[in-house]
Image 1 (cartoon, rainbow, N blue to C red):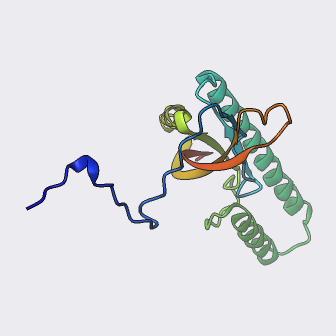
Image 2: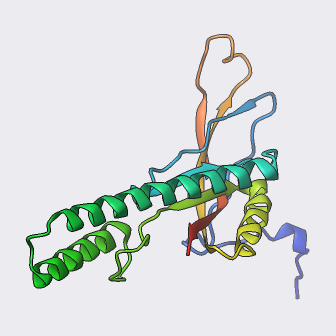
Image 3: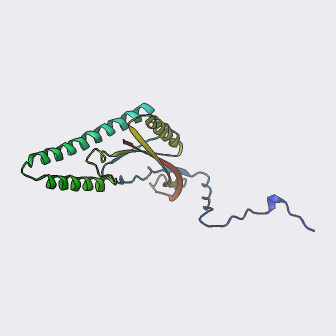
Length: 197
């Protein structure tokens, strides 16, 4: 009975969606130039995205998020006040017409913000999305925990992955300004969506 050493048997991993293919090793003498991570547009017009790195100061992030939340609240409040003033100016309208106008306004603001509530309050005050990849995920978690402890904030977390593009430049190609070979590597990402109650 012939026995083989474990080191002689190559590891066979099926190539399917559950087992991603590992990138080949970078050749000796080659350098890697990393491109910026691609950004997405906000999902709604009322959301603001803040990208952070591991070196971004914690206090700076929390101040930016709070400033944006306050700005969103002021904008939503002024829009709500404008509607209230318009409704009050129409003194000749019957009570039934005023109620229908309020219901129309409520349904339009709920559609615009993605909410299903039917109030004329500040439900569309907007959200701030804090996004980090790789080592910055820890900082996103810290920011989310900070705002989760605030009484006026609601925090939702969403995980994902982002394809980051690197250029592998062979030795000698740098002189000619060559772009090199593109390699896509997947990075984990975390989004913290913060909005006011």
